Image 1 (cartoon, rainbow, N blue to C red):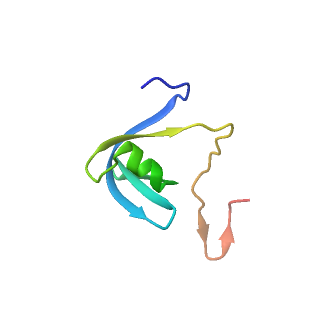
Image 2 (image 1 turned 120 degrees about the vertical axis):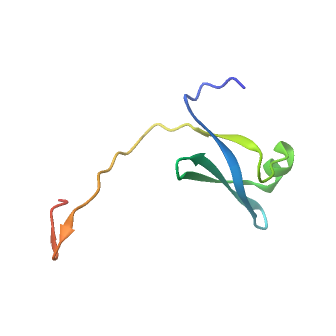
Length: 80
């Protein structure tokens, strides 16, 4: 698999929840990290995705947002 996207996260499929048209696929990335994607049911069939299979989450985006934990105590928030 060759792609221009550099953000490729390898994982194992742990859940496939099918709806009427789309499905939510959840990958276990290890170390307690999971990522989910909404894809078409046709893609589930085309890729023959099943729980237990290895797969990649491929992220292509023009923006990445970084956040930090907030420490709010006794109603006094320091996250501004």
